[in-house]
Length: 320
Image (cartoon, rainbow, N blue to C red):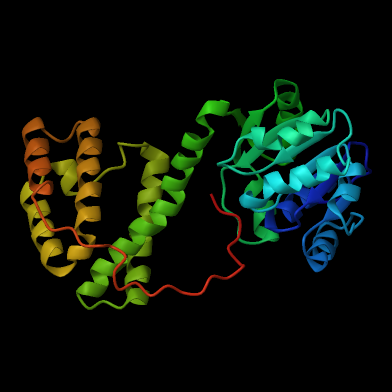
């Protein structure tokens, strides 16, 4: 992106992590003035300013917010409300300032202290996951961006979403948590399902690294089929064909070899039967036989047993 002469509103970035840095970079190259950057760690704010190529670094969030017409609070979710309250208490929000958070799970109403100060509040959430600022700039382009907030802020938010390179859509306030749950299922749960597949391969003696490389083409092919055929059209295999005997073999082996994963395996199987039925390739009789096989009684073990928990790191990236 090549920077152009600034002719738009002034922006403050509060929380100079992956998303804040990427947002600042994109908007700066769309002509916005990055008027202020503040972060809990001063070195993070300086690093963000260097990446963005613009922006005055402030030691405190109130001063950074005062310099802007649009304030992005791009801190971790648990800090958003507290940061907003501190800025409001310090008189950091001017009347009609647009205050934005980018959490997928939290509603715009957590910015109520900004609203009480006369600001307009809104949440803008890209349906993407970002590991670093450069990747985030790239992945933001074409991403769908969910918007929820004050009626008088939504028009501004739509423009911001388009300037970020995204495709905006509206989320009702009452449905914000469910919206985010859907995103978590297709992002985070997908990783967990792949992990289940890897553990099954490990149980038969295939090293995890080899298993992942072997399964990646299948994973990518499935995603490609979903893109081309949609859901349930992309479903293949025994649940699409009604191959009950094959599924019964899987059930017996899972019960013996990975009993701690058995409940998860069968719950996923039951939902897959529903998808097969929706596709129309699974007969009613075969669907009933599959459901019966998948609901056999078993002693469910704790799926967390024997798990080694790694120490938490700060490099979690921006996730759904």
